[in-house]
Image (cartoon, rainbow, N blue to C red; front, side, top):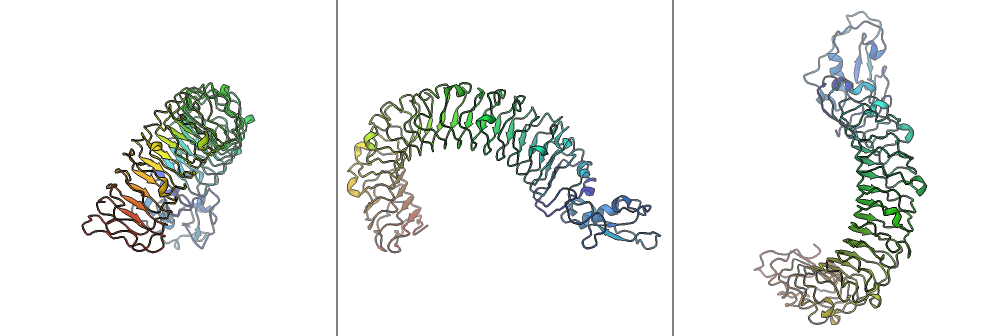
Length: 581
C-alpha cells in the first residue's frame, strides 16, 4: 500500500498461492487496457523483455528458447516500481540470445497494463483484498471464491460483474463507496451465491434507485450520497436481518416510498433519511426502529398514524424541516412511549409541542420561534434532563415562573440567544449547566440563583451586566460552580466573593482596568483566568493578586491597552502561562 504501482505484479502473485491478505491501497492501478504503452513494441521504459519463444506475450510464433518462466517473472518484478518485495531470491539474467537462430529480434515490451482479469486466479486462499484509492474504472471480473472482505472504494468504478462478488460464500464485507457506479453498472445477479454479506457500502456513487436483488443477509447498507429518488416496491422485502440503513443525501420524495418500503425490515434499528425531499414521515416504519433521522427534509406536519408502528423509537431527529405552528399537533408523538431524545431545531415552531412522551429525556428546540413558555407546557415530561430552547424569542415577561417547576431531573438548561432581561425564577435544584449567554440580562440577584447548589457551569456572556447589577451574595449558594463565563459584558473589575470551587473564570471583552490584591481570595482552586480584550495596562494587576492560587495554569491578558506584566511571587510552585497563551 501507499506505493506508486500502476499495474498489478500478477506474475509474482502466482507464487503466493497461500496469500490471505493483499493490500494495494492508495496506488495508481487502473483497469486493464488503461495503462501506458502496449503489449509489444515499447522501447522507452520496458517492464520486461520480449524473447522469441514467448509467443503468448509478444505475438511471436517461434518455439520457446527458455524452458522456464522464472527469468521472465524475475525481470517483471525488478522493473516494476514497488513490486520487488514480492520476490524471494535474486533474479537470474537471461542467456545471450545471439547464438540462437530466430527470425524475431530482442524487443522491449510492456506487460498487459493495469489490472488483468486473471490477476487473482492463483490466489485460492485470499480472504482480504484492499484496492481502495486507485484508478480502476471497472471492477475485476473474477475474484477468489475464498474472499471475505473486498474493498474497492475511492476508485472510478462504473461497472461490476456477476463473478466480481457473486458466488463467494464466505464474503462478508464489500466496500464500493466513492466510485461512479450507476444502476446499469450493477448486474441483477451481482451478489448471487454470496449469502453471508453483512456490510455493503455503495455510498457516494450515481445510483438513481435502490438496486434490486441485494443480499438477504445484509445487516448494514450504505447508500448515502447518491441520486436515489425511488425505492422500488419489494426492493427491501427480503432483507429481514438489516439493522442499519443509510439513505441520506439523496433525492427521495414521498412518491418514491410507499407503506411497504420498510415494513418487512423486522430487525431495522437505524434509518437515516436526512437531506432528502420528503414532506411527510414515511409510513410502515418497523417496531424495532430505535433511531430515525429525518433532518433537512421538507416535512410540514407529523402525523401520529405514521409513527404508530415505530413504538420502539428512542431518537427522533426532525431538525431543519418546515414544521410550523401546527406542525406537531397534540398527541402526535404519543405513540412513541419510549422516546428518549427529540431534535426539532431549525424549524418554525411557535410553542413547545403539547403532550410529549412522558419518558422524554432530551428536548432540543433551538432556532425556532418560541416566544412564550407556560406553567404546564412541560408538565408531561417530568423526566426531562436536557432542555434546549436557545435562540428563540423568549422574553422574561412571557416565561412563567413555574415553567420549570416539575422538571426535577433537569440537568442542562440552554436559554441562550433569547430576549431575557433576568434569570428565570424557579429553576430546578439539580441543575448542572445553565446557559444564558446572548440575552439582555442587566441584573443578577441572589434570589434568582438560590437553591442551585449543584450548578457547575454558568454561562452569562454577551449580556449587559455591570458590577453594580450583581447583588451582594449572588454567588453565595453556588458552592459547586466550576466554570463562570462573564465575558463580553460591561464589568469594570473582577466581581467579588466568587464561589470557592471556581476553576475557570472568563472575563474577556469587558471593561476591567484594574485587578486588586484581593480579587481572587475566595477562589483558591482557580486554574484558568481569561482577561483578554479589557482595559488593562502594564501594571494593572497587583503583585499579590495570584497569591494562594497554586493550581493556576493559564492567565490570558492579550489584546489589552498595553502588554500586561503578570507578577508572581517566587514561592509559587507552578508558574502560569501569561500573555496570550
